[in-house]
Structure formats: structure tokens, C-alpha cells
Length: 229
Image (tube, rainbow, N blue to C red; front, side, top):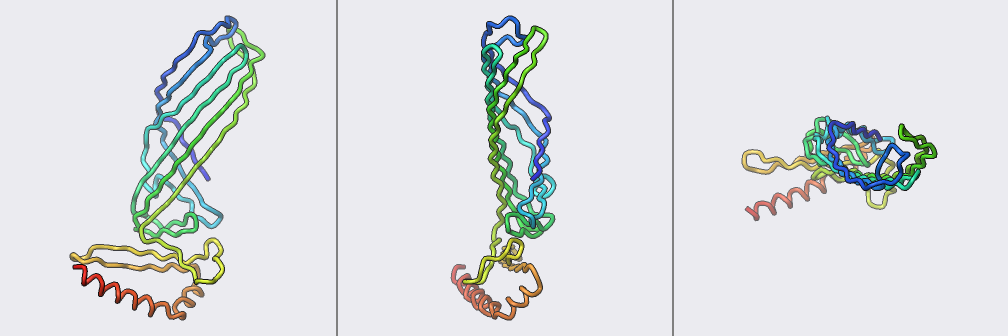
């Protein structure tokens, strides 16, 4: 997983209390910050060893957004406690320029796909400055970070097909069904694309007779749609 968010701009609002330590270059006991920033994201994620690297910017069309982060610092003598929280969320819907594979699903080129990324980052830190003078300070910093990221891709009509009673397929060996609805001359055209992981799987599906059953189901659907006009 690769996620880089370089800073472009930030505006900061600080509220500080009065400190009593005269030997420190920092004259506050409490500081609160509200930071507005607009990163230029470079997000490339891969799901599993067989997944396709998904470029959220160039492939899924994620755009820049403005975010807020909160920071609190308390200071007592040579000791500081820091707390910060950032919530980052991106979402976009686009027609895929390439076929990608993510979280066991295959999303084919041209299919409208929605991407959602929700990232929560919380930091708690402690700083001890044994050396503190009016010119500067020297100390140790300890940080504890909690990251929670949820990434989802969704597309209408994309399903995974397995034989009932058969063992679950290995990652990358699923059969993916993609249903696409398009308006053509005032009528709806349904296109079904069955993506097989190998020629052997394709031949097994053809030999199973499922094609005849599917055609019977489509004929019934066609008769039903006539009654709904």
C-alpha cells in the first residue's frame, strides 16, 4: 500500500495559555491548533498479492479536497503531552479507462465505478526536554499512532460466480459476471460479460449447459418487461 499526501497549503489558528517557565524558549502552558490544509494526493493501493495496483488519481479520478486537523499540546516544565486527530476522506465515480482487480473483484474497462477512501489518523505523544535554555531545548519524543483506513470500490452489476456446493475459489480464480445496461434507440440493452480465470474454466461452464438455462431466464425477463410498458 502506498499513500503519500504532500502538503500544498495550510492555515493555522493557535490559542495559547500563559507559561511560568522563564528558562524555556517556549512561553506557553497550553496550545490548541485548528489546521486547514489541502494536500495533493498520490494514492496507489493494492489488495492482496494478485490485486492490481489501483491509482486513485489517474484511474479513478479522485480530486483534491480541503481537510481539517486538530492538535492539542499541554506543557508543564520539561514535559509535554501532544494529541492530534485527522480525518481524510476521498470519493469519486468514473468510467474505468483500464481493467483493474481489487479485493477479489474484477472491474472491467468502461464500467462506471465508485471509489471511497476513509482514513482516520490519531496521534498521542509525550516529549521530555531535560535540556531547556532560552536559545533552544534538547529532549526525547515518543509517539503512539492509530491508523484506520477503509477503501471500497463498487460498480453496478458486478458479481462473483461460483458453483453451489463447490469449495470457495482461490484468490484470483473467481468467475466475475458484469451486467451493463445501456439505452439504445429508446430501448434498454443488457450486456452480460463473464470473465473466467482460465480457458479450462470457460470450457467447463460452456459444457455445463448453464447457457441454455440463462437464455430461458432472459426470455422470461423479456416477456415480463413487455407487460410493464
